[in-house]
Length: 251
Ligand SMILES: NC(=O)c1ccc[n+]([C@@H]2O[C@H](COP(=O)([O-])OP(=O)(O)OC[C@H]3O[C@@H](n4cnc5c(N)ncnc54)[C@H](O)[C@@H]3O)[C@@H](O)[C@H]2O)c1
Image 1 (cartoon, rainbow, N blue to C red):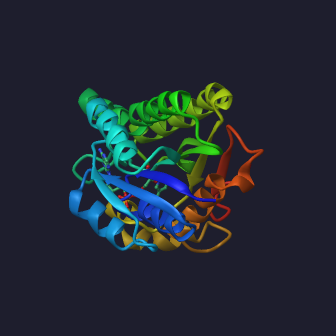
Image 2 (cartoon, helix red, strand yellow; image 1 turned 90 degrees about the horizontal axis):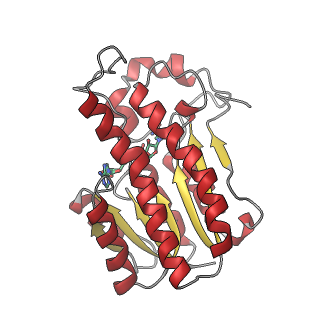
């Protein structure tokens, strides 16, 4: 199964791994990121040599609207949308408590982690309503932090991921008539620059030791679930959340 895939937040970690795995399966991949050089490096190294890079701010409506227009103009109608851009919501390297939460910091996390996915879904659905694409897919990267007591994560992060994961269920209901499925992958602790930016190495043993796997996950292990949801093999899965957390949370 191939087609055009747009990965938002594709310049690093889970988004970059998803771009690689979709490209390996024959997709023409648009790698969009706030960081131009990162998007360009990932797109340029994709298997198949058909990747293209785009600069976009997933917290900005205009930027996202322009991104969808540019990708469809230059590459074709999008079959697979993956929204991986996100922020952990730390402030100056520290986890803000609710008591210490500045409203503008809260709003910034919500704008990227919750409003951004809504705008991405909106743009994708408007376009697939105008020009349907067979087996169209939306895959959002949620978080285990929104499924359990996540005392190490800022409330803004947890609440924004919870909002995004609830949004996916509503979106699945609206998108079905347009031939688009909407699903979430909820990672546990995945060894990416984002995790390393907020979690010191000395916490590894305590944290990853609690998983059945006994280690952190890799971005490729999340990308495998993304690729499955993007494929036609997921044809009876909709509004679902696939937990990929090494057994850290079972439900
Ligand atoms: N790493 C983990 O342990 C983990 C766990 C659960 C969920 N997640 C989620 O997975 C997703 C990907 O995280 P990751 O760990 O791969 O992080 P990462 O930092 O490696 O990659 C995130 C990418 O998003 C881009 N980005 C940030 N702000 C953006 C914006 N405004 N517009 C466009 N792009 C932007 C960054 O430049 C970066 O390339 C995030 O939504 C994150 O919340 C990660």
